Image (tube, rainbow, N blue to C red; front, side, top):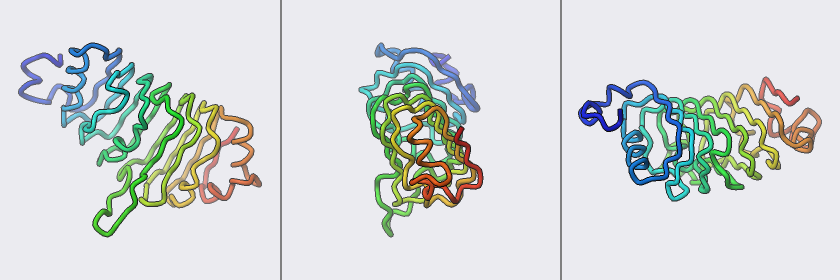
Amino acid sequence: MLKSPILNNSNCLLQYSSWISGDFKTEEEQSLLRQLLGCHHLRQLSLWGYLNLVDKLPDHFPPNLTYLHMGNTELEEDPMPTLEKLPNLRSLILDWNSYIGKEMVCSSAPTTPSNSSRCFPQLKSLMLESIQNLEEWKVERGHVCLFRLVIIVDCPKLKEIPNGLRFITTLRELQIQRVSEALRDRHREGGEDFYKVHHVPSIVIP
């Protein structure tokens, strides 16, 4: 479909959503992936498989994306600096080993009078699932995020919830499942890090 002349003249075939699965190892496969990411009208994208893009995401994703689900992409470089710039993204799922690094940082660049942009300006739902190597996740205070739902599932090496979450007043629900017992205990009511999340109306920590 990506090779069709219709796509060369119009993005209408991918105006709404696309689900792509496979390992993008060859130059031809990577070229097709770049074509897909160049479809500006694409709204929803599920991308599953080893990307082999020099271990990092391309600089540009379709700017109209509202939903992105990535899995098994095995990125070695933190994807957040790229993804947080998407202006219309509302739901992001980083699934099974989409990222294999140890540290993830949201909004590391500070806000200045000349740069008032926000990280993830429209993102309401963020899910981190089965990011097996993730040890540290930071949400910097420099920008204001609008998260309403954060779900963390099966991240066994994660040491703590970001301190930056305490400044996100829009956050209404936090789910923490299948993580270390130490992390769960620290963020339950009465735990040493409960102050980070006490403002969240719904906290689910089995």
